[in-house]
Image (cartoon, rainbow, N blue to C red; front, side, top):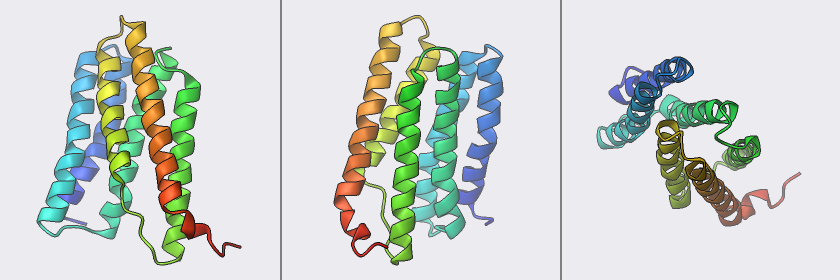
Length: 173
């Protein structure tokens, strides 16, 4: 648990409350910088974990959890500020719980469901879009566009995970 990759993941977790405090105290630009740094740290810790053989069970658990908490924290803030519809965030939450459940069922069958390309596109679109929403608050059309992109990539990637792994539910009780 003392690997560089793990330390970067834990730093990302520590950045989440910093981001929220800055966002809620009307320091959106600085909050966005923190959000960007936290988002980029995901790329860095993943690269380090794979390149330097620092992949761990803790990292496999904590890395995606940190990403979800970071993104959902930003979404909660934007929903509260009226920039994102709550139902969009609810669909994002549903997809995250559903895919996590799918992975749990697969794990019981000693099967690992790796991140799909569409999931990576969803994450990238979401993180970049949230940055735009955090900075450009004066454009309601941008909020609608970003919310639509997040919604479409979320639903697409969720459906793809289930279609590609539907055999996980064969012989289910």
